[in-house]
Image 1 (cartoon, helix red, strand yellow):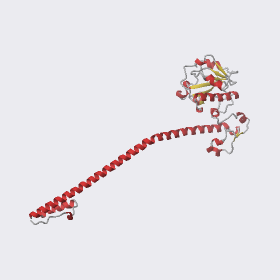
Image 2 (cartoon, rainbow, N blue to C red; image 1 turned 180 degrees about the vertical axis):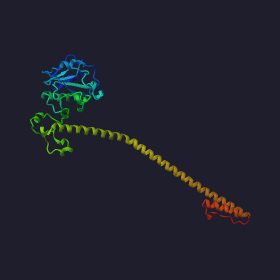
Image 3 (cartoon, helix red, strand yellow; image 1 turned 60 degrees about the vertical axis):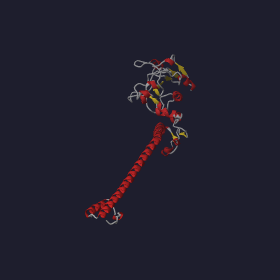
Image 4 (cartoon, helix red, strand yellow; image 1 turned 60 degrees about the horizontal axis):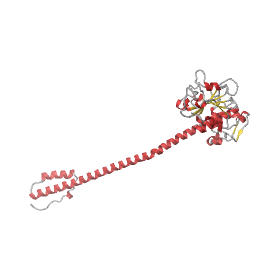
Length: 338
């Protein structure tokens, strides 16, 4: 149960209203905290937080609580439940975006003109509080900015939800400190100059795209910052993949080297074996020639001593000598008379 959630908001210097029994309210405990989903109430009533009863007690077809937190018109926070709330609905994947893993925040807003153009449909005090306090929740629960999303970004089918009626690209840019609180300047069409959030030097490989570090409302700053934010996230993801591939290769290199060394050793052993076999073959051939030569010497010498006719046998000996490449100079005949 998220029983520390009120303390987190108070440490961020917020006005916090703890609803009765909130620490035990919920559909069981949370499995984890992986994401924060941003909603708007779409309530037409006026006042600080007229949607409280519905968010806390539910409505027809939707059991309570509907979210863990509510944000009123004056930036007052309402802590409604510490357990699982039913707010995500059908989504892209329950293991990430499901109710068991996601904190839901219902901001009081009429929900009109749902679009992706800044935060013009929220009160300024709500906007500032939302940013600062979501950052506090991120820091406590270790939630990356990429996991702070609007309901419409997680819902399926894609057209099922329209909340929140704001630019989540701009919202995440603020959380990443790539877009500071310059909303009033931009709305007044004043140039935002030399602001760290807008300096193109933050993206050195892209500085040739813009002639100066000056953006105004006419420059469609939301789209520009959104482009940089998406590019930055893509570069981070690609960097992670490259690092993972490098680490994997680094781990595999010793094994590969061992395999190559073993294969080389096996080849050397085979070469040595063939060399020995060849040497043995040459030795056997040499010894055979010596033996044949000796036999021929003995036979010819013996037959000559006996005075026998060796003409026919001599032809056979000549064939043997020719077959085994024996030179007649190698033969030593006995000159003893019979």
